[in-house]
Image 1 (tube, rainbow, N blue to C red):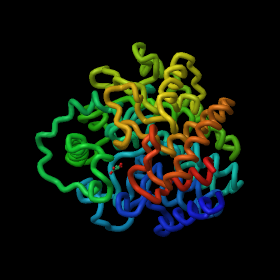
Image 2: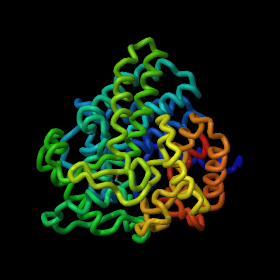
Image 3: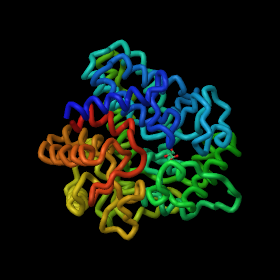
Length: 407
Ligand code: DGY
């Protein structure tokens, strides 16, 4: 694996645009929030200073409200749509108006364990705390973690969002020119109806000056996200552990974790026997279990019925945890989040498996993920049945998790 290790490092340094890395050349030419957190984890295996810098740059774009935007447009690039003019947030640096899964505290703790750079961690601590407070105040409804846009979940066109997406009015969207399908085969990307709705939700935020109260209470889309629910529980526990290590008061992050954990019954889908995405406007659950449920162990949530479902879903494929259940009508093995397996999600699931002491499953997931990368390269995602490499090539977070976990 020496050659692959060297190539993974070359991908990270090649995608480094000076203090931040882009996910991949062409398709994603700016800094993305959770991509950067994983990039930092990858850098920590060979360049500790550069790892912390990645997180510093990410948090340097934090809004006064505590939100860390999902895209930071450091430099202009018209190869991506929708760009800063469409978002119209008016921030410096220019950024989008929504966030992304808050994995930074989880990865900052892992990076610190590897590098022991306590002063760099200390500098980040108040920013991560402000970010978690923002999630509590503007994205949690009685402890249920929600997203206001599918892009905020990071799992854009996952069937998890179908119930909420069905009710988004696209009548005012008009014409626009997509860029993503110029970089990647259209059959591996979200469809036109998805894009119309993505834009309708962005336009709503822009028209309301990114007023969070308005977006949360009256916006066109609000769905509970099981992945973010679990990530926030874990991230707050990790932040409490970081607080203790730094001699800070851990009670606030601990209370946030407890509140979100207490709300888990709200997203329990009795019919599916799983924690599940749920439309907060109508109460409707998503129709199938997704890889979001597989992050339960990350939050220390053990549930035999759900694990049995997840085990069956995993056994239906050859490589990794699929983003959608192959038994579902909506399953599409190469279309982005409607079926493919994502090395980066497998890595996050594996952090949960390790914490729970599930060494056999962790080893299986690592072996399957490594095989995809060895056979197919450092791609964005893969067909979980035949292993076909999909989406963007020389992808930062795939290279990063190879270095930090899969190799
Ligand atoms: C995209 O443009 O596909 C991104 O996933 C949005 O964050």
